[in-house]
Each structure stands twice: as structure tokens, then as C-alpha cells.
Length: 303
Image 1 (cartoon, rainbow, N blue to C red):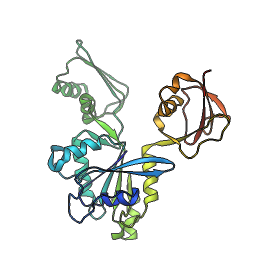
Image 2 (image 1 turned 120 degrees about the vertical axis):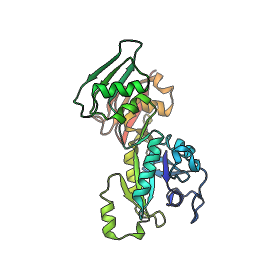
Image 3 (image 1 turned 135 degrees about the horizontal axis):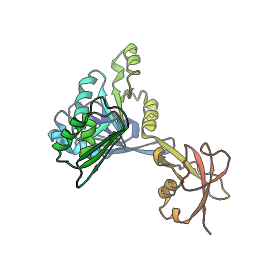
Image 4 (image 1 turned 30 degrees about the vertical axis):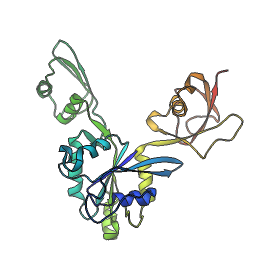
């Protein structure tokens, strides 16, 4: 699911309405949307759920403006789409990022490569696989003592910061990809638009005029990291109308079976695969085989 997050009256509801054909009350005053409004858009044969969340404001992580409920729902999303008014994007962007960070959401970041294992005794044992520019033994022990951890084994596999260490210790952080949709581009010049295209993770759009929706959907697809798998019944043509949509990180034959029905994997003998993930078409593969976008798979059951 994709969650629309943004200040009140930046065009989230208009975007949902024009993108998914779902009516969400629109008005020229703030806090028009007071509940989460779901919608669905079909792209590349896959159904992607969209959710228009109520407007978020400064102090949301502390509960202001029903902020805790909004951010709690944002934590469940596979992708966050922050909708910004192109005429005043930076202030809103900083506030929203700060509120989401305060609730344990990390945008466009990977979990720090730090291993922490608590023990009953033995003190703090620290191992490093790379040079540390910020964390030294004293800083690490100070941070751990703040959390009353006095016996643990910690392995630093990246050049980590204090915030990275705290995130690992607290253990309740969630890492979500994020796209910034800069709305209302009909109110700026072509020169300003060219500059916006160079900003990382940003996509300029006009929700009202439906401008640049194709690029937005393509970016959403890429950030969700989805692939389409087509199933082929024995002796028949592949079913290209309803692909099975999987995340690229979890796209083995076993994952495909579980997406169809969890009982299938127990009866699976082998699979035949056509596509980019195999050298020969078809190729006989096992359940651990990693699939790629638009592969065709025939599942062969045990007799």
C-alpha cells in the first residue's frame, strides 16, 4: 500500500480522486480529510492500494491534530508519498520528516549494519569490520549504559553514527521508501520545473490537471520494487491478464507458491520457468530459484 502524507490542503485528496477515481472530499480549507480514504490503481497489471491520510502538521508525533493515528497508519505502508505544495515545499518537507522520524520512521534509508546481542554476563564486547569515524568504544558503552545494557556483544559492520546505534538498541524503527510529489506545478515556470526534476526522490505533478501521472506511477512501481510473474497451466498459454505481483526481495518460486496458496509448496515437485531468470527456455528449477520481472512459471506437482 502507498500512503499519501502531507500538510492539509496540498492536494492529497485531489491526487487520489484523479489517480484512482475515488471520491475524497475536497475543499479550500484545512483538515477536510479527517479519516483515511482508500483507493486502488491498476498499473502494469498489478493492483496498488492508495491511502489518503488526514493532513499532518507540526507536533503530530506528540498527538496534535490526530497526528499519532496518522503516523501509525503511515508505519504500515510499503511506500510513503509525501505531497508538497511546490510554492512552499522545503518548510513542509522538514516538518513532516521530523514528525515521521520522531515516530520511528526512517525514510529512504537502509537499516544500519550493526549486530547487537544481549548477554547475561561478560561486559560489553565490541567488534568492528570497518573503520569508525564517529563511534569509539567509550561512546558505544555510554549509549548502551543509557539503556541499562551492561552485557552485550556488538559488531559494527558499517561506519555508523550515534543515531544508527540508538536505532538498533531501541529496535522499533521501520525503514520505508519515500517519494516527494511536488504538486501544483501549473503555478511555476518551465525553468523552475527543470530544477525540480534534478532533486532526488522528487517528482513534479499537477493533481488538478493530471500532469505527469505516468512518471509518478512509474516511480511508485520502481520504489515498491515489484515484479510480475505469469502462471502457465500445463498445456495452455500463460495467463497474462492477472499476474502474481511479488516484491523483488522475496521472489523465489517458494514465494510464488505461498502467494497463490500455502498448500502448493508441499505438493510441488519442480517448476518450469521461461524468462530472464533462466538460461534456457523452459528451464527446470527448484523452489529456491530467484524469479525476475515477467517470468512465466509452470508449477509441476508431485504425483
